[in-house]
Amino acid sequence: MKVLVVGAGAVGGYFGGRLHEKGVDVTFLVREGRQKQLKEKGLKIESIHGNYTFQPKTVLTTESDIEVYDVILIGTKSYHFNQAIQDIKPFVGTQTTIIPMLNGIKHLYELQTMFAIEQIIGGLCFVESTVNEEGTIIQTSPSHELVYGELSGEETERIMKIEEVFSHTKASIRRSNTILQDMWHKYMFITGLSGVTSLFRSSIGPILKTEHGLEIIEGLFAEIGFIMRKMNAPIVDGIEEVQVNRVKEMDYTMKSSMQRDMEKGFQVEANHLQGYLLSEAEKHKVNTPYLKIVYANLETYGKQ
Image 1: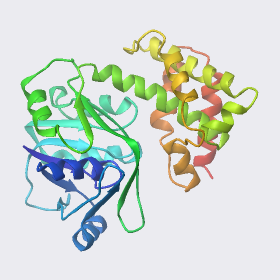
Image 2 (image 1 turned 90 degrees about the vertical axis):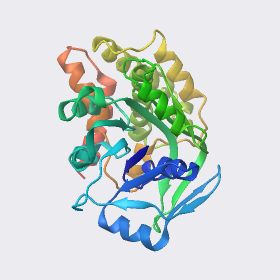
Image 3 (image 1 turned 120 degrees about the vertical axis):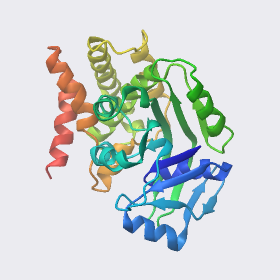
């Protein structure tokens, strides 16, 4: 099985590296600058789960000798996603399976307008990783999970083959029969957590210690859940309370990746996460004061 990973950064580089470590045939679709860096230094992973350095196979979108791949993993940020879709087109054959690892849900619909619906399966990941100035991938937390599965939940021949190839790596890479629900649940969690931590410019602990912090968190998750139910999303009853309890149990110093990006002055995924839900709320005439405040904060940041 030939696997193409879009990008060799904090997400794609980490999971692609773990697959390569197992012996999977992995190639990374990169830009010229990253390709040069990888040729000079190799792809380096420094992780609490074990370090790994290797010389990766890379390909550029500008190359004329294009191969078709069996599986394509997309782990870009949402604001690079439209370009990523264009970049992978030459590498997609009739039997190619595309696995997006982005946060949110909107990208699934965008993929389905560009490729055959049956070529796309669901995916998500939980990993705390970053790329330092030298191009090394630094992975620091116990969680390093990639989850994938057929959107229908079926145990198809191809999904079982992917499971066979992707299993037994140093990362937790697993198949799910409820991947669509998993994606919606993660969407809810990451939207709420990133929204509140970026709003207060704080890790979660101090927010929970304020007089009205928990009330605001509960209100935001209640709004998100209400919108998702209006959208007929496959979320379970009581998931809002489950998500709030997860937030309450987090380490005092925990920050969302969106907040860390803001602290570095980077672009954020506001439109893909909070913005998409807000547009759906307006479509379904749902009042969302907390979500509007969160999104206004992110819009203000984006205009600075």
